[in-house]
Length: 226
Image: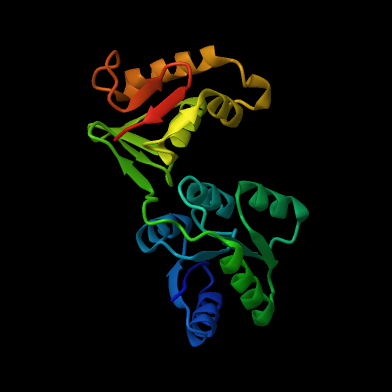
């Protein structure tokens, strides 16, 4: 059974979607704000997310970014915001489709079926929280904790750690890290990686000079180990 997570703070829309989707054999989960959406997605591993942008706590685009930190689940934005700027922002954040309110149920259902067909179901090995023996990385909330305290990371440090954590156990090439964190023009600036990995190890590793989790593969790249 296909699981759909509906995220909207308008009860009548949630009710209409629940009735229509359940009648067509979908397993429907709901959330009424962004924080609840991220929690529900991590717990239920939905096959598709239908998301309103105008949520009461955090903007829907931030929810998309939080989800994209750890999952490739198809995301259909359902919003009263018809401005092209909002659409571009949502799509750039990682949404797969955009439906403007008011909407026709048949159109939404067709888009949902298409998203499920072309989307990649989240693998069971993908988790929102990656826990090592020394620290935890919350890919959805974009936070790191060590010894029960949050560790402050710069945006660049987070970008490196996120990419390594999402590819844990696998070698991530120097060029890939540089291109994805800094951009294509920095593909050969390997000294950037040495500086930032040293900073991350000082913040996260019990013994920075003998790292257990942020491993250097000399001349090739880096590996994140639990």
